[in-house]
Length: 339
Image 1 (cartoon, helix red, strand yellow):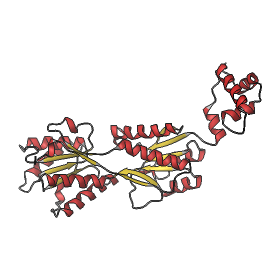
Image 2 (cartoon, helix red, strand yellow; image 1 turned 90 degrees about the horizontal axis):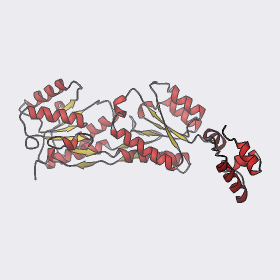
Image 3 (cartoon, rainbow, N blue to C red; image 1 turned 90 degrees about the vertical axis):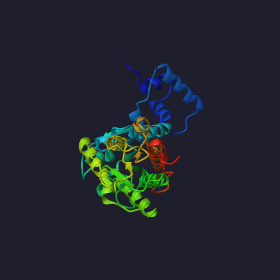
Image 4 (cartoon, helix red, strand yellow; image 1 turned 180 degrees about the horizontal axis):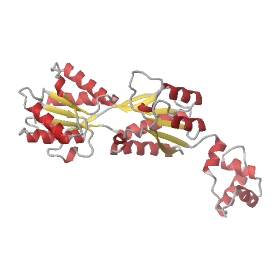
């Protein structure tokens, strides 16, 4: 049978309330008494109940990260794992646990609201898709700190959020390709309704306009999971007289199938066509030729989000914090047209 707080009190010759105050660091207890209690806990192998401690301190000691489970692919990648690991390291430094929950509910967010009302978490990390007026109102009333992991859909929002500067990444990609002598640059996009893709397209168009290059509607290609159909579409595009001479791809998978379609057309990479990808992992450096990549530091993104939330929880934060993290370019053979 495990020891109880009463056993510790009897062993050390104090009251159970004194033991409780020492465990929860409340009140003024002499150093001598504290030492007696700690020695008793050690000899009796007594371990405080963390849940009871949380109630005593008025804190849950946990941060909840909510995942929108309907977007499976967004979380089934190394970048998300890096973000999550970075957040966990920050939370552990502050004595908090990271708890992960999924939510498929639309509109009402009842699962999230139950957690808020039951105060099972001291703060929340939320994806943009879960944030709506009702949830924002509930979080404000309950005074629950939260940070959104991703840029909001519409302009300024009254909360803190962290994201990668996707517009900067696309602009850097276009600038690099133009420096290498490419001028007819296509963009292979995923879901164009996604905020991050809209930002990439905005950066792409801005850079083309800045360099006074023509914008072609058929140069923005929506990637299809039907890879045979996608490769056929690229082959058809390359058969035109005014075909693209470079492709910016939304991720490594898109870039790989684009590269294969370009090779099948008889074009040389990078001499005839340049290929550049967003995200370095997992294929970019292993393709033939290795792919130039826009680097996104998702570990840093996780750190920023966690630190902002910790500041809010400790009340040292100063209102809403918006953080757009810069991208960089990892240049490889797939775009080095000029030595």
